[in-house]
Length: 272
Image 1 (cartoon, rainbow, N blue to C red):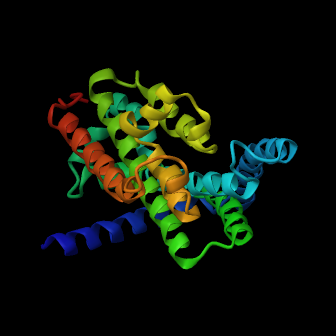
Image 2: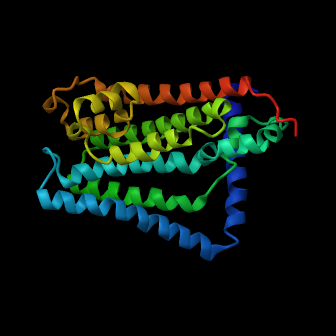
């Protein structure tokens, strides 16, 4: 089977597995809807302090409420999609200790595919809807042009790849630590998404360098947003940085998958 056909087949199997999981959870519709609404309102409450902060001080280092909402929506959608589709990797440490990996290795499907679909939680679409709402309102408010919308799309797609790479990398570390790095993953994903809800220009120089050259989270929304808003020349940054966003995010995704496979190569069966 050629690589394109193999990729299409993997996507098809992933859809079938997650659809089966969704149907099983939808048997309890009241619980599903309650979780969706809870996720939506809980995450919306995260944006309310930003709204009042921006209204109270009439901006944040030259960033308007609409522009900060754009940053918030971009990173929210990126992390929401990555969390929904790669949720199984967040729980991988538990599966590894319980011996679930042995069962997956015996099946005629890729391990990455099985892990990604192993803990599908459809109610987490509430996070995506909430971020899309904020993003849609900000786009309409700012009246972004088609080229600007293209930059927003680049940031959202790239951010999804980057966060997916992070969770796969963190899952790979479990082969050495057996669950002891879960907090590091949460810091880079949930903590990173929270930090990127604001322009990174408000942080100290050392932290900005970490977000750009260390863990390149700034390429998720900050640099694409600068290009979308036509602000790259006003910040003193190199104008080519936004163009690196899809490259950097793609590299992180590939590196995360490669590191996980390296850990998988050293795995020894639990013997159970």
